[in-house]
Image (cartoon, rainbow, N blue to C red; front, top):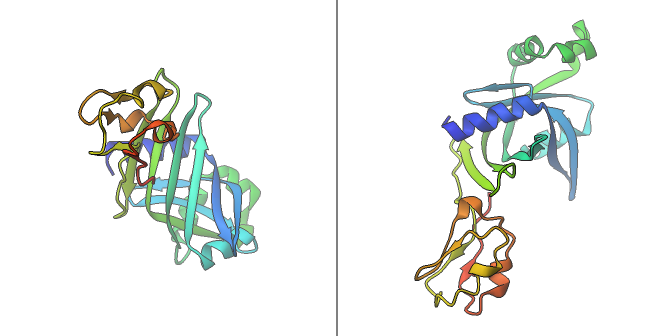
Length: 204
């Protein structure tokens, strides 16, 4: 894992309670789940076999995770999960999460299954300073998409976009340039540009 990924993983553990989103048929579904364990190969969490969350993960093993700190630093991931075979990882999760043991003591924890988020891409979006900072990362073989909007060669350097940016991250030049790391990705510059010279980035 690189430095940004490690920072994101620490945020996940520090936040603990995170929004985990899945798809149930054609409907979105979301619930609060703890990140139970982080290792070099990804994130581990658990759920009970009787929960709709368990069936949704089995039917479509993809997930979106999001959480935010008290000082407005958010972490967001999109990734692929798989159920852990055997009970070894589940025992390790129980060892590191005494609160879970209190909820499912002794043999009652046998209803729980461990899942592994093994491949994902995401971002840390920091709104705690004067200017937003967006750092993207990936692990498990996924790829990082560059953040922010992009000004193309159709730009005539008229400057219309520069003054319209809420966080003033559009710089003069031919063509003008957007600092994608601080871009809010709001799209105001796209609506203002008279030459249709600005395109959104690929997102996560």
